Image (cartoon, rainbow, N blue to C red):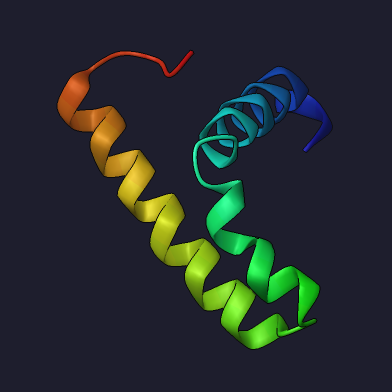
Length: 61
């Protein structure tokens, strides 16, 4: 992991930018402390944002 630290940091930055697009949709799960629902919804929303990114071919800003 230490060999590709730049890639890890880059991936974390990219994912945090994607999360900014849908954090409000996860808020209800966070408030209710529903870990299972939060995890499920997070995965679904992350996949949706990654698909959007692939279709658009550009970074979110």
